[in-house]
Image (cartoon, rainbow, N blue to C red; front, side):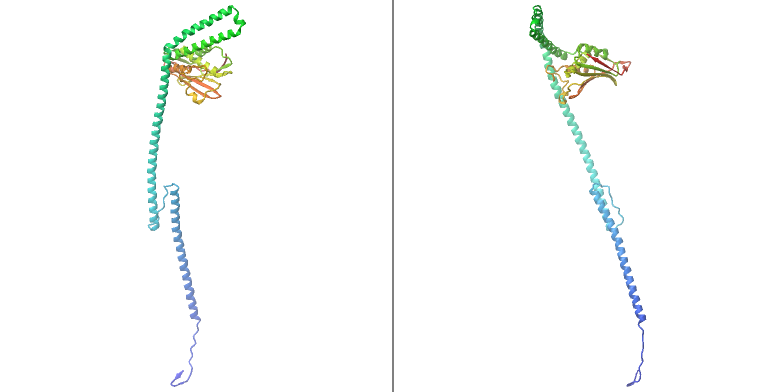
Length: 380
């Protein structure tokens, strides 16, 4: 202590630092904790916000991918009015617009397809009518040519053929008396060939006249099986062909011209025999088919190529070396005049089936038919 001009004593104050340091450390610790809490809070809030934004962005991305795949019905939830909400709203508006445009495009496409389909049908119908008209024109030209031939040519040909036949008959008679036929077989062979060729020419003339002068059928009740048996007598020996009758209904009557049906059946049997030169089997089936009698002739011969099948009923068309091409056309014309139908189906190497449908005879408005269900075999 200083008093006056001299030092008279010493005064000392002693302070401890422990409380101050403790307070300082406490403040520092609190600051660190508060800072850490704030950092964690900021990080947590940032994570949550980032996660929410990322989730909404991913939804937008997934929706965009779906639209890219063609799913225009996908939409994004508009959860808020912020920038992401505005973006979601604009995305949905774009999807609605695309969906509407797609519907309009689909409708236009369907209308276009419908118009193309209708136009294609019209063109196909027109083409079919044109082909039918061309086929009918060709058919009419053939019929006109056949008609002109049948007016005078058959008579002009049959007169000399008759004279030739009489000459052959006279020669045979004279040669028989002189034993020349037995001593010279070649002479007999040539005379038989001449007689056969005359018969064939006469048949061609007969086919020509028959096709162009088919009379209207004289309708009467006809038992189909009876007409079929008569056809076998007309055809004669079956050679090596076996006839199998598959009769499902044996009491079928039709209103028809008996002689014309016999002619049709005989022609179909002869065609089957010629299709099986080495022998085979002809199955004839008969059954009731709705209001009609269905009769089919199925051979296991050579069959007919598809490109030739559609011409089978054309007049003057034939695949035979010695055919006239009028037999099947004649049959179809006769069946048509009976309000029936004649169809053909064939597979090369398997055989051919010709099927006839004829309206059943009616008694008091009811078709007449019985049932049998038997299979008969006939060897000619």
